[in-house]
Image (cartoon, rainbow, N blue to C red):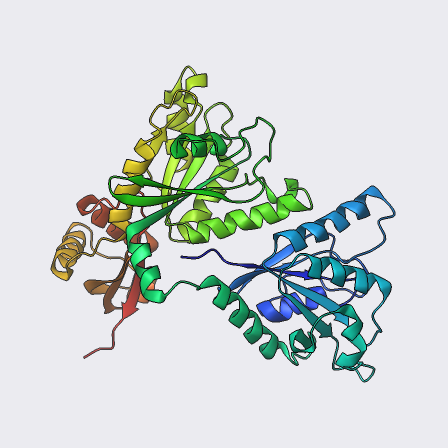
Length: 440
């Protein structure tokens, strides 16, 4: 799976970037107001599972350090994005600031689209009036974020450009490579030892190892061979709580990390044995499971603590929602258990691709019904009839029957536990759907 490309919205204040993001995302994600400079930080949205759209603060004169940091953020957007949307108010002639932004965007050598917003207004200027910006008319789009005019054409062009860049390999070649390779993303808070583990796994210094937080700003990757399999290791920037992330490049590093989760098959969630904080680690684990990825909880820096049993007890309690996730105790300094990550990755990959026979699945279902009769809400009696597997990576199971819409969540969890007793699915989330069949 390819990582999602990033599209950055840049431009002056009050050009309608936030409204444009909301229109493309079909949601009110960004704050929209008439006051200039409403967007003081980056707002993101995943558009049609095709790309990540980032709305940045509008360009203003950096008259103080705060405004200067916002301008730095725009430059970071240009440097980090795969495609840039320069958004202007189509009712205003391009200014020197607009020309400066266009020059910065074009200098990046990234694809640049000119989006002339508010084109529904009577004062909207013709495309010819914006030729001085140096952007081709064929890459200029007149839209209205308010009415939706021109939005479908813009979105189609974005998807066409990004998809062609994202799928340069022949589809057959991509499919073969996907079967042979496993992508593992190292995920965690800053300074938990991701780069050190990355280097230990790669057997060479490809990432900068530093005790200073935030050293890794983008995704480093290396491909290694293990037991005849190709493994791609992704080293990502550390994720802090959203409120503690700095404006600028750290925001885009966080976006790249979330994109790496989508790209990966398995995520190694690194937890610092010397500085354990459960809430953010739990949140990251939830994001990994929600994305349907395999998961390994990696306890790092174990050589620096005397009693790992206490930490393991805390991990078991805090991560009780993913009891299927293996816990690996490591030390990049001593090399302890580092390569066991590869063995676990192979096991999890096998579990993610497992395809179970329908007859075996129904033995588990019937045994679950015998041991604990299904209960429903409001004293109803749902009747599960049979179960089939419909997908892998992650494994997905559909239970058919009558009245299953009222089936109590506790029985659904009971069924999952019974299935995991028979087939462990190590490090692998499994998904269930419940379908009410029409009465015969």
